[in-house]
Amino acid sequence: MPQPALSRLIAIIEEIAQGNYSDDIMALTGPEQPEEIRAIAEAMGLMMVKVEAREFSLENLAAELRAANADLKQRALATVEAMAAALGARDAYTQGHGQRVGRLAAALARRVGLEPQEVEEVRVAGILHDIGKIGFSDQVFANEDTVPSPELLREIRTHPQLGAEIVESLDFLGPVREFVLCHHERPDGQGYPQGLGGEDIPLGARLISVADVYDALTTDRPYQEGRSRAEALEVLQGLAGGGLDPELVRAFPQCLAGLPAAGG
Image 1 (cartoon, rainbow, N blue to C red):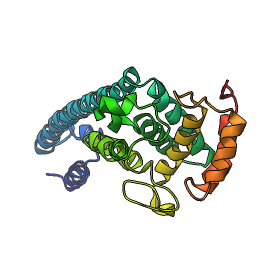
Image 2 (tube, rainbow, N blue to C red):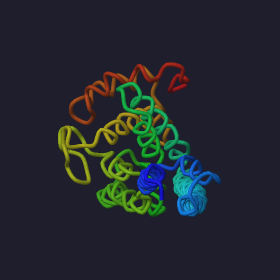
Image 3 (cartoon, helix red, strand yellow):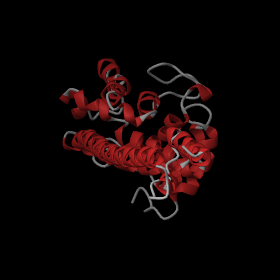
């Protein structure tokens, strides 16, 4: 067997073994090549075709699985969002609240420079932040008193934990669970359910808190007419540093451009 042809064959096979496929092997299948070289080169060429076909099939299968997985995620998320929206059937105040909070929190997240994926996580958490209320008694939704009774207050304060438990099964949502769990924590440590303070509270939860309070202030309730935008922003300023993150409160007014004025 001629040495140059053998050396060339060995070099090409070594490249193929490393996953570097090319048509170089075909140059050794011509009639001018020794029979042994030609036979090995042809066998290697057929093997490459089979391997590439198998890899192509695996890539297609992986793409199909990714598409199916993405579809399952979307359907699971849509189901939970539908559950959150269903709260509006029991409580007129809740109608549209999650969507508004999600939109406002996402606008604030963009304003403070979060990446698009992080903004989307904040938006989804804003939509779902009250999902834990789905298990509340009718007494909670029927309450029209400005100050709930201690018993009702204890029940109300369970909703971040209940919401986090509902979202926990959707592990593809990443930090959304923590945002839902912590959206009633306060910088001064007087919030719930864990009594976290300052930057121990996840940023996403702090963003949602600002949007949540603003929407609560500007929405009509049985015992309170919604306030104007200016009035609500003044209240937010008063809560800065205690109930709300002061930097986020300062950034929030810039997120309201183009939105309808609150409070009629």
